[in-house]
Length: 155
Image 1 (cartoon, rainbow, N blue to C red):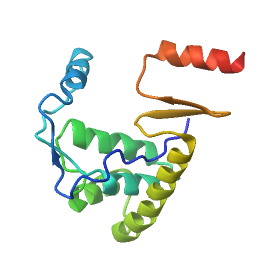
Image 2 (tube, rainbow, N blue to C red):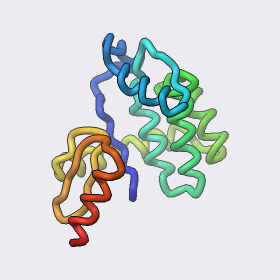
Image 3 (tube, one colour):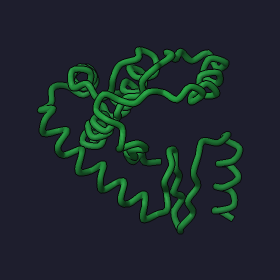
């Protein structure tokens, strides 16, 4: 499996956007039922910079730790993923010292390329799954759904 950055809401302003009243309540309930901590938010971050950092550093051995930590600071700690000081701290903690400006510039190009590739494949949601041979599947699903898809593709 390979992660590709996909900016679901590039239209969000740098300061983020208000969380719609009902948005996320189902997800929050599922996370809480699973015993996973999640903070209630009033604002959704503009995640473009976090995606850029992640994309630019995807080949680093510590990338999985960076990826997990970005999710953790957002969902558990309530940090703003647009804030460069947050990104610098997470990057230093997980990958080491980087030139953040250069990383953001390189990553922004990679995010745009990934968006174009996703659109070419017909993906317009996150998560989205591309199994090859033109099989595209949007959305989050139970493992059993993916097991069935893989069995059919092997088939």
